[in-house]
Amino acid sequence: MTKPFSSLYRGQLLRDMEIQEYDLLVIGGGITGAGIALDAQVRGINTALIEMQDFAAGTSSRSTKLVHGGLRYLKQLEFKLVAEVGRERAIVYENAPHVTTPEWMLLPMIEGGTYGKFATSIGLRVYDALAGVKKNERRIMLNKEQTLAKEPLLAKEKLKGGGYYVEYRTDDARLTMEVMKEAVRRGAVASNYVKAEELLYENNKITGVVAIDQISGEKITIRAKKIINAAGPWVDTIREIDGSKKGKRLHVTKGIHLVIDGKRFPLKQSVYFDTPDGRMVFAIPRDGKTYVGTTDTNYQGDIANPKMTVEDRDYILRAANFMFPTLELTGKDVESSWAGLRPLIHEEGKSPSELSRKDEIFISESGLLTIAGGKLTGYRKMAERIVDLLAEQFKAEGRGTYPRCTTDHIRLSGGDVGGAEKFGTFKKEKVKEGVMLGLSEQEAKQLVLRYGSNVSRIFSRISEHDAEMTETGLPKQVFGPLLYAIEEEMATTPEDFFVRRTGALYFNMQGVREWKEPVIAYMAQKLDWNVEERMNHQKRLEQFMYDAAIPIQE
Ligand SMILES: Cc1cc2nc3c(=O)[nH]c(=O)nc-3n(C[C@H](O)[C@H](O)[C@H](O)COP(=O)(O)OP(=O)(O)OC[C@H]3O[C@@H](n4cnc5c(N)ncnc54)[C@H](O)[C@@H]3O)c2cc1C
Image (cartoon, rainbow, N blue to C red; front, top):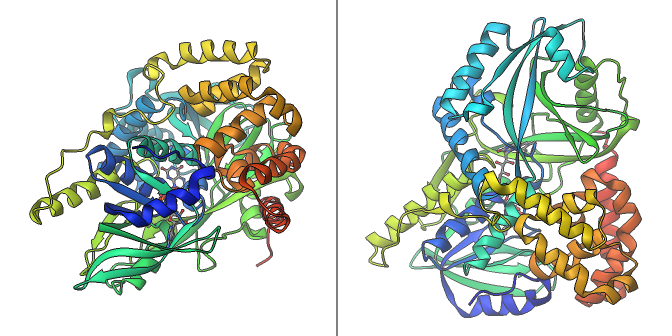
């Protein structure tokens, strides 16, 4: 039976986890782990997943938030990768059009830039062919005037023209949540804030983990026939515990993004542009803000808390001022930011940008399976590869046969909108419903885009909890998502709600300041926090807000 994916029942869920032996335990609740849990559970492999922070709190909420066609891999001649990620983004779009939006991207060509006119034209055409780009989304070449008409903020003097092609925008944390929720709806068991601390063995074969509930401090033993290490930047830590960190190892690089208010950076159009040092970065408008990134630097610090440094911030500001010189952006314009770590496979002598984004699977002597590298965009294919391997192992060991992967046809949670083609009509109808509930058109639209077909579950909470909502002092567009996040998305801390469930801490810092007190008060009441717990949650949220806005000196 499906267990509620609610922070109200988390304690019970963890007690239940101790009782049974699972076919598979996944360590790590980022996009990779979530994708594996969904694929395995769909094939009938009884799966549990543990995540030591919140779902997607690792790299999977800290990316550029694009379901890439992989243009930059073309430059590195990784043709197979371009073709695969191109196909994958079409699949994600079909199965979850609410979290994937086609976005025309402008590639300005400048004097001495990465792509000249010929290379841009040919490169984008090859890319269209390899990535299987739809006819109406194939690249268009623009002259200087046409390019400036698309984005008047571009540096006029340097500009020679532009390429115009389609990328898909996503919300990485929400995509991870939708995959996770679908896995749970199909019978997988998953919990956040449960850390695998020790590995258990019988006859030198891995059979389980001893984990610690990071909320209660309690120890939990979870047993499984197979264990997959999908711990992103932490995969080598788990391999170390297993005594199998030999041969290939991880190479962690850091990337940051800055968020600037749309009034200060009124970008009309997403742009993928050259930096003065020959790299390329994105500037993308979202929810009245513009975000710009990313950097790519070697990283040796604390994996759980990568932070924006003054140097990172100034690098991105310099790049933005280089391409959009009239803005004259300074550190004061940065409202928020995020820093993430790429879990890449080390290759001797290569710089961060040259390292391949391909994924790899390692099998240890104990049977621990580790998957490392890869991209958000390729999560489904990564899951397919490792679950295929798992199914082969089960078969060889006489532990049953399992069907092939079918996740290419499986709608993610919230994706039940009649297919990508019909999402526009669905959106219109649901926005009307939201307006009838008293939401503004803009608020209703934002909710439909965030929750897809699950928006009905937000609307019903708004209409059925009127008295409770009034008592909290929260507006409908905050209360509905908050109650839904607690009851159906296992939001356990205020940070879960403001960062991974709504993205507000990045794109609506003002809203976080305005609503943090009543949100914390309501969560404290629902989740039964004592005074000390409530204070700790408040402090943590405030620290997170501070770190997002203020860079550290290194
Ligand atoms: C700056 C930047 C920009 C990027 N942009 C893009 C992009 O636009 N498009 C794209 O496709 N890809 C992009 N990527 C890559 C993509 O974000 C990552 O490949 C992907 O998110 C990795 O997911 P993951 O699940 O493997 O790792 P993570 O998301 O880090 O998940 C691993 C999880 O394991 C958990 N964990 C670790 N140890 C334990 C333990 N002992 N017990 C329990 N849980 C544990 C962690 O808490 C973590 O949440 C970008 C990456 C970066 C850094």
